Length: 403
Image (cartoon, rainbow, N blue to C red; front, side):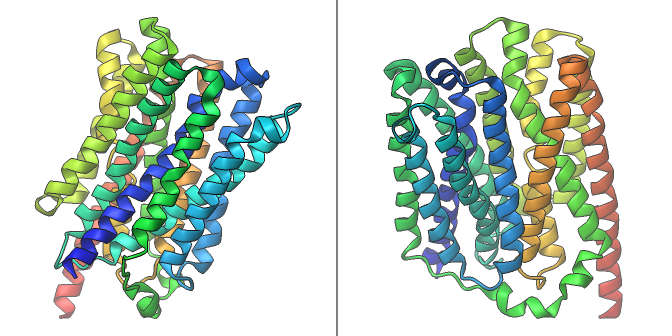
């Protein structure tokens, strides 16, 4: 069984490669698409918005069916849709040469839906691994750390290939990456998943869990935490371009890449040492450090210091998403896989909503003032985790007294 649990964890971690590709390829191809096909910045923004919106739609739909369909079947469907979406994306100039935007929209919907499905199903798959084999909090952190590492790999691969082979050959680069969901499907075939949650979900009613103060606070924390992470992820490259005067390639490599490295490092560290650390305290301290970082970046004390802090926000925000999922999973062990789906919905809503809000603030005021205002998000996230920690502590005390 140990080999099977290892296979579950490895297959789930590598499945995050597809998610990282789906999330980053349009952003990295923005400039080539504008020069090659005359697409506007507004159209590129629509593609990014469709990506987020479709993921949210997938999260919502899976909330209702995830406890009724086998996890492996959902993974197979997600990988199939991802492969089809990427192939259509590559063929957009051939399908409709006069207006490549239309097939790009359709293909983005397909692979974004696949990304949303994977986002929802991978957490409950890893959660089936028993605590006797692997600490669940650590395993969950390891799962989410691989998204960041695959993000690093995809950024480097796509950026270097575009630079070496030329932007006009982008479709062959993305076509080569379409093999990733195929390989992941093959990886999942020998895996055996015991779906205990789906059979025990009646133990805790959905309504009872949904109205629990701990679950409500977890939802708020993941909304705000997703905002803390996504805003810096979106604007760290822009910060490098504006303040360091480097090229787009260099700004992606310095800013976006190093941010992703810190994001992965934080999750990987907790993945190895999570069983020795109190997750609630990690989240409280991390949110406080993210608050200080955003504040100092916004005050524009020093350019190099601000750049270092921008990158370190990746480390400070690394557990804001997987940490909440782990806490909710432990607090409601028999609730069913729907709680992972619901939290994914709130996380995507937070990323989409605060990403748009941050963009509007930066346009109307400035990038530095945006960071200064957004500093309230990690502060709110910290308050949520303090409250969660207090409620969980009281719940454990009450349960021990009842026993």
